[in-house]
Length: 349
Image (cartoon, rainbow, N blue to C red; front, side):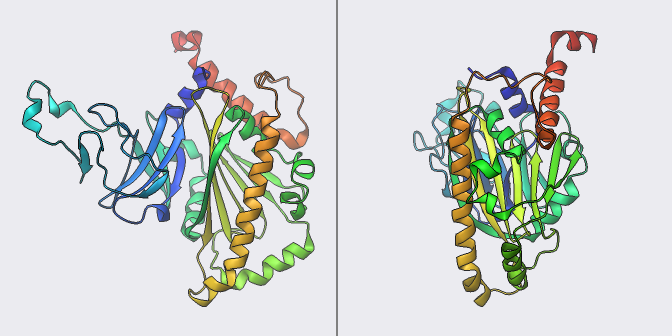
């Protein structure tokens, strides 16, 4: 069983789960997996809703696919949802039941620019949770044009192992020597926004930097610097980019068995200075970025699988280098939340 803290974080925090461009049409949907089951994001006649993918009648899953475009209709008994209302076949046959109480188990949604956030029982509003990060995310979201690729598979490790791996740079020369390591990132600057953080690191590989500068004329990027940026959105999400041409939105959601992580990443590309010819020109570049990202995440998955499941992740007396400061910050955030949950803190409050 997963620790109680995993479910608490899933229920009480806002989670960055999609970009507006992923659900442009009526009946478009995305399905993500996490500790609470399935999370469905659905375009209901222009309104994006989020719910738990369980028909309230007999528990059948509405949408088994990872994504697509389909009516929200249960294949078991025909119950459906449309225009903000549950559609029930032959409602008179349910006279012994109070159908007015029946509804989708829907969640709260909020937008930060064009990024969609979902929460179940949020402890605060989204702006407060982001702690000043909202302006940065909003600007980046407006640069994004569309999604290019989606990758998803389980990491064979606790979600905190996967998150901590993504928070530090020390493993890059050893695990990603021929992929992410080829950028030769210089020591960057970490900025903190409450529990969230932003790494901004210059690219040291001059050949790669020249190549990236050459293709700048194809992209209409307004809200990013010519560097590598990795944003951690506490507790489960990351947004990373190089020069703002492409973005990777990653979710490391805890699973119900506690020993696996539901990993999903979506790759987006930014708006182009013009369509048509530019789309053809940048196609090989996007394919190369997609291949590189896939290799990096596979390398991360393999090293995380090798971490002992019994290795302690709690406590502030861990052996961490100065470049692993974001891990120390992350662990302190987790410890502070655990203290808030403790019976003594509750009784005192």
